[in-house]
Structure formats: structure tokens, C-alpha cells
Image 1: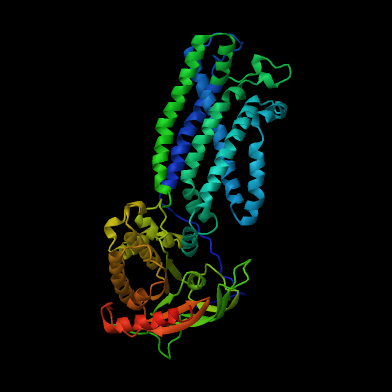
Image 2: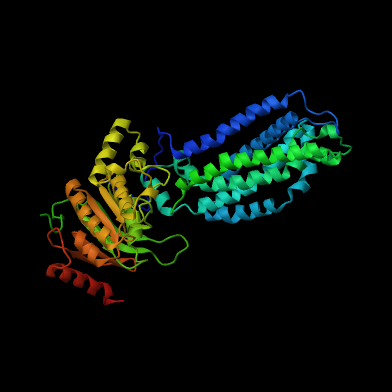
Length: 275
Length: 248
């Protein structure tokens, strides 16, 4: 028997759990699997010997394909970073009413800062580390982050109190609470936020890869190899055929990703919704 | 037939509230004030009252979800609860939902499978073990919620308005099943309800809570199964109703 009073608090137990493969774990595998493939291709593409070295040089169709993979990899890295940062930020912001009243207005302000206005500053910072790719990924990361954070905040706020109480009563506490309750509970919002975020990333890709505009005395050599920079170069040099091919490849990639990943995940995420 | 209160003078209570109060942070009026009662092992007690009267807060204090701000509560370590809408985890199968508390206790897989299967059979839901909550009706979800609570072998089973969202036929069916489960498992049950008929058809004792305090405790000395058509049943219902509406 246990006596409980205002002076006595019940002990909180933390357990390490052996847990069979769940829907949540399968979801994260679905997301991380293609990302791993893209990352692998990125490493190959990064050292692909046929990247154009001069502006105006004709770009072959295989080169556009490789460039689109490099662009996809850039988006993938930015997306993974955005998810890794967004989840704890959203959890922190909804932890209690005090955190919410402080952090949500701060997030609102940060979200409203125009990303492109920050781009020159970011590039100058990353030039110090000799990483123009880092600058592009960082700007893509920022463009994705707030979409995911705010969607997740919405998801966290609609977790029914009874679910939290049930987790408490059945001993799911500490890290296990986040792993077994919070992460699965926000899967639908993570999917929605991810779709918005990646779309936003594609919108910014042209700007993020054409860096010369933001570097004092910048040249085409400082642009990043990718489908975005190919589009800009093709447009600037009236290479209509290359331009159309690049747009075609981009549309196909977005379409395939939408069909094979997002649509499947949207259907799959229905299982995680509270009624 | 089992009937009436399981409480006898020499029996040690399994739950004991002594002058318990609960005031939520930022509130001036206590949600629960000076509540004193006890529950005997194996007893079925029903807390009834209007919304906002303090019955759910009382239940949450037994569950350990809320700490009292005054008085003392004596209760067993293992208490489990079934919730109003089941509170099942939508991403887990029926089997995994019932296994929830067992996995937290790091039990061997073999024990988990045996326990979950037993509980699912007890609530007549064994064939649904691979389904997800979305595939179940409201009544079936309640059965799973009860199986999940029973799986951890609690000393006390708490039920928070478990039938309030169900239709009349399903509720009647679940009432019979709950009485059967109670008699088979001999668990102590504390249930919150806002329906006098429900309380009279299920409980040994009915505790009427109003304005955060206990207004009156009624002993229901009827044999099971209890039927609303019976005169004694109607008499008890009327008695509680009169008290319920007395000072409204």
C-alpha cells in the first residue's frame, strides 16, 4: 500500500523497452531509406567528373540527371536537418504554457524574417569555412524549418489528454514517452509539414544554387552544380533545349517523389490520427 | 449471487481518502474539498455527480494523475484505468495496446502473449488482436481499454465514464460483461458516471459528489443481474435522484 499526500510524491520509474517493429518505426524507415539512397548517390555525384566548369557550356542530358540528384541530395540533407531541429523545438514550445507563451512568439518572429535577406550574410559566414554547399543547405534548411515546426506544434497540441494519462498510468515515462507516444502521435503532422517544407525547398533551389549574385565579385564558378543553377545558366544563355530538359527532369523527380513517397505516407499516416 | 457491499468492519480498506482536497494551480475554488471515504477490497464503487463536481478529479487522484493539495490518500501501487473514449493508441494493434503496460514492466514476450491473449478472451475480443483501433466500434474500444487495464493485474480498476459515448444496446451489453469480469477477477472497481441508473445497476455503493464534496453515500443491496424494471431498482434510483436534485 502506498500513502500519498501533498508531502509524498510517487516515484517515477523509467524503463528500457524491448518493442516490436511498430508503425512509427516503419514510417521512419520509409523516410530514412530513400534519404540514405539519395545521400549515397550524392556522394557519387559530388565527384562526378562531368560537371560544367564554365558558364554557357552545353549541358548534356545525363549531366542534368546527375545535377538533379545533387540538388535532391542537397534538399535531402537540409530536410533531415530541419526535421532533427524541428521536433525538439516543437516539443519544447508545447511543453507547458510558459514555454508556449515565450517560444511561439519568438518562432513567429524568426519565421517572418525573409530568408533571402539573410542569404548574403549566410554565404559570407560559410565562405569562411570554404563551404558554399553548406551555405545552400543552410538556406534550404531555414526555408523548411518553420513549416515543420509550426505543423508539429499543431500536432502536439491535439494529442488527447487521456492518451498522455494512459501513457503515465501504464508506465511509459521519460525517453520512452517521447519514443512511444509523442513521435508516433505527430507522424501525420510530420508528413504534412514535410510536404510543405520540401516544396518550399524546391522553390528556393534556384536561388540557393546560384551563389555568384550574393558574393562580391562572384563568378559562375562559385555556383553550385545542380538543376537550379543549370536552369539559370540555360535561361541566361538562351539554351532553350537544356532549359526544357532541366524543367522536365525537375518535374519528373517532384512527381515521382510525390507519387511514391508523399502519397503513400499520407495514406499510411491515417493510422496515426486520433479520432 | 453476489450482492451488496463487500465492506465489512474487520476488512482493511484498499483505498482510503482522509480529508482530501485538490485546488488546481491558478484556481481559488477547490475542485475537491474535504473528501473522506474508503473502498474495501473487491468492492464496486461508483462516483456520480454533475459535470465539474469533482468526481473525475477524485478518480485521477486515485490513479496518481493528480496529487492532492490537502489530506492523505492511501492506495495500492498498481492502479489501472480505462478512459471515456478508450484512449487507445491508434498506431498500435489491439494486441500491442493491451500489452502497453506489460512492455513497460519489461516482461518476457511469452508472458506478455499469454497475458494479453487471456485478457482479450475475457473481454471477448481475441479475434480482433491484429486489428487497429480505427477498425473497432466504440464498444469494442472500451473492451480493449478494460483489457489493457486488467492486463497489468491492478489492485484497483478505475473507469472514467466508460460508457458515456455508447448507444443504449452496447451499454447494456457492456454492463453485463463488466459485472461478469468483476465477479471473475474479483477486482476492486471505482467508476465515474453521471447516470444514476448505471450506478445502481453496477455498484455496491454509490457516492454522490457535488461541489467538490461528498453529499451522500448509498449502499445498493440488490442481487445481480439488476434490471431497471424491478421495483427495488427503481426505488434506489429514486432515492439517489432525490438526493441529487435536493439542493440544486
